[in-house]
Image 1: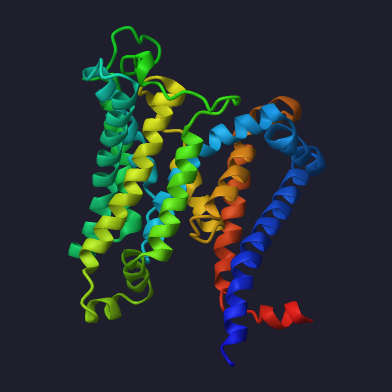
Image 2: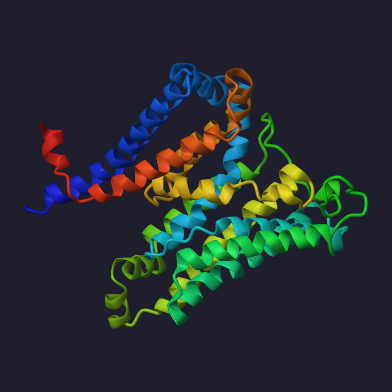
Length: 352
């Protein structure tokens, strides 16, 4: 009976701390707006209007949420093994380049095989890129946070080299890119909605990841590694394979996000792939406390914030990067809130 309050505390913390951190972050940003002479009420009103106020706003928000779901999984899955991987942006851009290269050189397969081929190419490239992070962590003790971030910068440089050099379409004068995909290789919209099928793919990926982590022996082994790696080694678990494998899975999802951007949005691989989805995914994963199902509503919320940046810039004469400032403040608030994990008797407060 003595453990019941502790279990209840953990359940309450899972919801209360992220929500509290979000509220504090929004309040601090409101103070920032007042310091620069802007109205917080007007700002948050425009965010709601542009992100969630109309059917068109919802379509725009949900379309933006698709890559964010997969980018957040690239952070959340390794986190369950105790790894802080923040370089998903690299897997996204390389996955997009791999999809664009496949579409350039392998044509005439038809819609199903063509899209599947691009997806497999992107997953393999993204998986290998982030899988290296897990392998380096286990084999050489290289800090996964630093290595994943450095690999992201390398990936972006490699992407720029490829789309401006060997894979560049000669017709892309002002914006270097690969050749446009043929129509059969483009991911269409969900019938009746101006939202591409990438949203469905992202939601299914979150559900699959939840089942894998919470309902399978592989996921249980991964959680043991995340809880106590020494205990996992004593039990004879293949720690190295688990680290590399789950990091590869996370990178595969990020690569798939790049493929969706190429096939559903841009129509070719170009510099727009480095749109910051991987970095926003870090915030989403931490705000969701690495819960695969909680990633879905949090990604939609953050996508709504990003969808409002243009309207805020026009109406309030604020820079387009204002939303990034908001995200940064919320992220700092979340990191601070982590220090209270396990220290608050929330069950007693809840009963009172």
